[in-house]
Image (cartoon, rainbow, N blue to C red; front, side, top):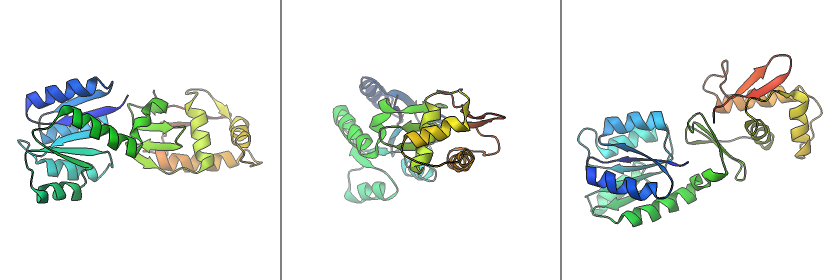
Length: 229
């Protein structure tokens, strides 16, 4: 499910937005200040952030800038500031949208969905998601996200990771994986070529390639996918 983080120090706004967004069958996480928001962002890895600018500790601008150092997750800013310069500043520091209070919760939903559709996050129902959303694969769209950031894989790499992710825990031989890419129209005749592709995939998706969480070696056999769905 899509995960939405709402950051605001007004309980009523949190309550109303939470109710509306849950009706869309999204998981909702709440934070009342900037420090809590950043901690929750790094633990939950949300797919969308609704962020108030006027927070009791860190400013919303600061929170946005911190998030943008590591992620391109969509951010919608909420604020009582309606001046043009304020809106422009919000966009310049990395916000995807800007809504001035008071606002309609229905408008927030519509604009949020529009951004999610544009950025590809609305296709979560067609995805394979692992380790609390840290790795997400979109087979139909041929997209892979690690910690909400897009990762570029070659067609062969994408074919291999999708095949393995569809059967977590299964020990694939190199011959199995070679047949997978040959059936997909990629004709490579040597099983050891698979090792090269696996090495490249690990570089792109693993935090520690020496101790991989996802593409694990099965000694004497081949590889298996170890992600937790």
